[in-house]
Image 1 (cartoon, rainbow, N blue to C red):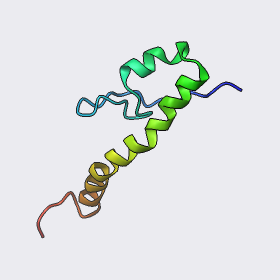
Image 2: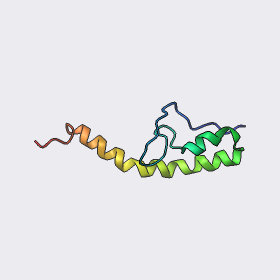
Image 3: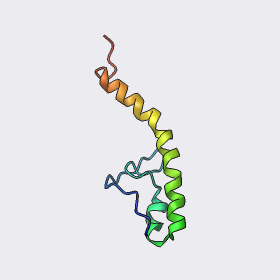
Image 4: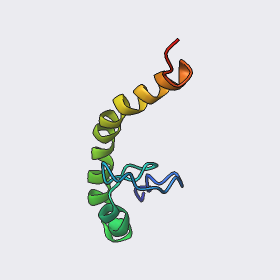
Length: 74
């Protein structure tokens, strides 16, 4: 069975990380996807959880600020 793409159709590149905000792949990984064999695709998939974990603190901070009214002093 073929390895599916991690694309979730949220295609915006994060300039700070160099990763797509949707699938967390680099532009090179996205461009090469159709040329990679299943082993290569699995290698890309294997990197995604660590990338997601690295982004989580940043996203969590934004979420907390939004939850308290944008971080405004009370």
